[in-house]
Length: 184
Image 1 (cartoon, rainbow, N blue to C red):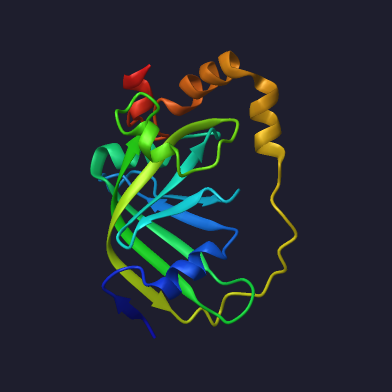
Image 2: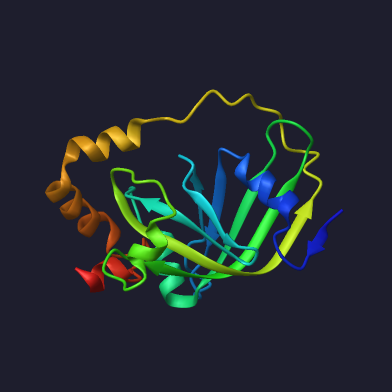
């Protein structure tokens, strides 16, 4: 059964902080556009307040979240308990992309880890906090984070990484521009 909360409670914050994986869902306004669901790890998620969260977004093969947020701001975070008691937590909100050139970058980025391949911050104001049972989520044992993405970004170097970000992250698969395309 679903349960609503007025904000992220200390218990829910503890649950979030104990998860090694979370998912971000976004979609364009167009009915023909692609819904995007991205898994995230590497301990990049942070609580900024009981109704504000964010994560450090690393360079990847696309930049759908950024394009969708620029168009409409809608996003959902999903956390699942893969260990311990079953639980699912969804955070619904309005998000924005914070690039290194943004005036708030220094203040906001200070609370996140410094990782190679950092592209942007995704910050969201949460308007719905909802849990559900999670009885159908399987149990998995956590073995550790993969270092492959970090090693790849470090090996690529700053200049080549910048070129890659522009080539692969300037528009969505539906052709929507991202803030990266306009910033650089």
